[in-house]
Length: 489
Image (cartoon, rainbow, N blue to C red; front, top):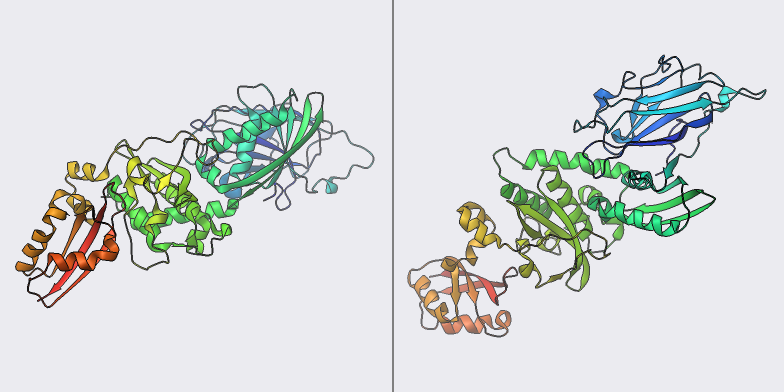
């Protein structure tokens, strides 16, 4: 995505941040000189702007007498992140000085005000014999301005804003000490990515070069992302539509997490071609297939929209690089791997919960990670030390427990080697046709030898036919299996 769009002539990006963002930043742009009389300004925000607050009263240009000279309503563009302030129809007067004003009455969609009012002076260039207003609408590449050694760190904010808008090529004008500038830029990018996990997992790579002398440099960036800004906006809108359908007002957060998990597993398939081009939420929603990064990012976006604390985590699973989620419920963190709960190849209507809200020691049987994630720069991951089965038992939430199949982990459904034969004899003597239980055993090769195991346990019992299905239970530390029996008499 490039900076210049349509016929808007952009000479400046001004970064404005709303109160409540990761860092509070009051824009302090450098005054502009020799501005063309028909140039338009673009004001760039880090959050979506409330359309109702975008009007001449709040965003305008005034002359030296304080009179508003803007004669067109400012335009909210680019999904609500930019406001274009067009030059007056007749243009600004040659040689005159004006002031661009953005008042603190401008609000974000979440009704957060700006940190402070922005005012930027600019002077129109003097007329020359060749001055021609019709030539001032040529497209120009936008550039950002940053200064060094400021607690406001505009360099960081401008990189953040460009990345959040998935700019693939942009330039920053930097003023300050050029010593160790390469290291400073690298560190700044790492900070930007570590502070926005969704952005971090959507980013693929970046490069930059810079050149300058004295205390001034131009930094040129190129970056690639899994999704474009338009695709990010589509995901945001589509997620809201999906949640409106699957979430009921009566649901608690536990039920909401399950609804999100079930929707993703039921409507997305793992891309068995392993195409990285599909590894993002947009492709999960439009193509119905993605990889682990797309699964995890989609779950993140859906739970974030529901105001349920959620993290992205990267490490290894099954020996391969992998991404999944951490979810907080009632102050306790759990691992949630929707990718591994989705059967491969895809089986329509089948939802499993083997990797649903696990503690650290439960998921460590198949997953591994370290603080800082795969790159080493992610924020420290919270510890997940709570067993979800214990939480549901304490809550007395039998319905949710059974919908997840977790009742089979309780003592009422657990059978070990000592009780196995007696348990089967009791069930069959009562002529029960279908029953499921958890089988804990130290016997080797249970999956391959289960026919012999069950034949020995049911020897002498009267029935016509006995079928079984046995699978290893993933979420427990013990060597155990979920066994389902069907008997005809």
